[in-house]
Amino acid sequence: MSGAPDIEAVFRAEYGRAVSVLVRFLGDIDLAEEAVQDAFTTAVRTWPETGVPPSPAGWIITTARNRAIDRLRRESSRDARQAEAALLHAPDPSAPDTSPEEGPVRDDRLRLIFTCCHPALALQSRVALTLRLLGGLGTAQIARAFLVPEPTLAQRLVRAKAKIRDAGIPYRVPRDADLPDRLGGVLAVLYLIFNEGYTGDPALCAEALRLGRLLAALMPDEPEVTGLLALMLLIEARRPARQDADGALVPLPEQDRSRWDRALLAEGQDLVRRCLRRNRPGPYQIQAAINAVHSDAPTAGATDWGQILALYDQLMAVAPSPVVALNRAVAVAETEGPARALDLVEALDLGRYHVLHAVRADLLRRLGRTAEAATEYGVAAGLAASEAERAHLERRGRDLGV
Image 1 (cartoon, rainbow, N blue to C red):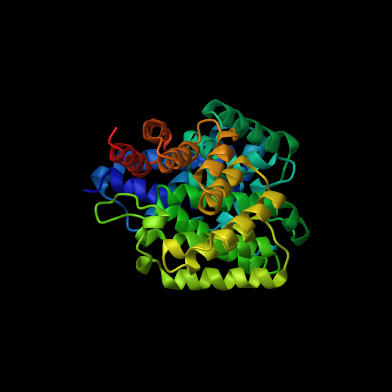
Image 2: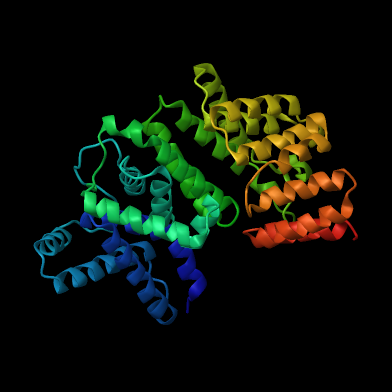
């Protein structure tokens, strides 16, 4: 019999699609999400005995549809009766979308991203809500991505859903003219989904790349769309070298570059060159260019840190943030030395962001301040989100021998 691991894999792969499909038919985010969660609860209860069905995604969507119909039948409002009728007379929701709905966005999941990224919502609320619905990410995971406390993030999600409901924001495919205004939120969503997958679930990275390619085909004249796709491709290309044979994390300077995915690198570099020819730089394009410089170097020692620092200077001018300043400090350490970089890091306020402490630990190590470095590695390990990162930082601390 199949058990929890199979259900967990289906959840990671299909939760977002199931919610997206149900939202299209119901026009109600809360009801769609609750119905899909009910379907997975039923799967947890029944699949260990009956086995995973031949089409698990179809089973989840159909079961969620039936749960939604049951709930609507228990309600007496006109809206509930209309929604029930829409579901009863709709085509099989588990089948590919062949509806004649007009509009440029044809993929259910990409369509949900654009729907949630309505300009009436604050940007962080758009991103958080879409991560919750599309990626099935928990509140704690999303809060970690935003570097905010979990209760704060939970309140944002509640307020975002309430605003959508109370303001009567429609669930429909945005018109061509609406797409650019929603693009910033959409790009942020895709990149956060990708980053969450890169530190944990590769399936999320694959989904972010799939949606990124769809978005690039939808909006080929938007350089930031091209830049984001290039950025994700160049980072994903390094995945095969990111862990050793024992599963331990291998940082970029220590990776075996012969293991990088050359096809993904070539595709990402080609997209970066297209961005450069357009000469309309934006944050994602600049970050892609930084990663392209890393990928051009045959060894870590051959990295052109001067060029990377210049690109970070440009990024700070276009989209300044403490995280960008932290990454810039890493480049400063390579060009001007760890003492100068440490001064820059000490001035940053990033709360409990584990990367800040990891960078500070490395700079202290290079300056010979071993005891302080060991303490910082311990702090960073305690804050790390993934087990692989935690183990890597703990190992760094032990290697100092203090």
